[in-house]
Length: 330
Ligand code: G3H
Ligand code: 13P
Ligand code: ZN
Image: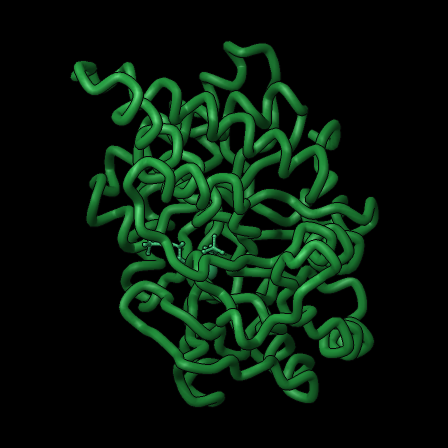
């Protein structure tokens, strides 16, 4: 049993409280490898932002959970070395069982998500409650989810959104004891969040997706005032990355994300954690493809992963400065 406190990590309690009061959101960036971790920490140290390092089940399988834990521990030291002691949370993204959450808590995670959103309401309550009971014994914070996002969540995929039912949130929060709640108001995972036929076109002919359901968010906020809300599936899918990927041999079709103004607006509400993974994947892929195409003789991984890391850092700094508003809040 390792406590996250020994590793210099923090849980999400205090940073969420400050984010709601200060009307900004904390970035939750997924990481699977060293370059992603380095760019997240560099960007958040330079902008002075608190950060949530997220590990999915897929990341655990890909990189090994022990290595990821040590990388997060290293991230704390690395941030100090770069000159700033920013709050760093190590969070399990989309935990799907009590055993997985327990294993993460026991090895030093400071926060876990138990995603029972695909279960019946009562089973979601029971599973989430069980995780909360264990997590709180160790001062680990827990994120639950109500409502189902369209798209793919690990192995589970849903064709359509099931928006969060505001009438359920008060009961869910009270009975489970969760510390934050992920909701479904029109975001979804991945790079293809909307079909072109769901969008309209602006004066420049650019596709504009349907707006998020801020009416549902407001209804939820009325029922659980000041309670930390989480937005998953919040990548904006920058079209310049999609264009670069396609220019250099990629084949990404109809890649559409959540407009940044919508996320800026959400960040000023009780939404205090915004999850971004796909945008980072696009940034890395665009940078790597560009190196491969323009320097075909290059075969040193540092020569393509290095530019990918630089591009990621630029993206994360932009998110923190211009979308989430968490710069300078560390
Ligand atoms: O919500 C899903 C995250 O983007 C993690 O994706 O399960 O492919 O690691 P992954
Ligand atoms: P995106 O696929 O929109 O980046 O969402 C990531 C996410 O929600 C991770 O849990
Ligand atoms: Zn998610």
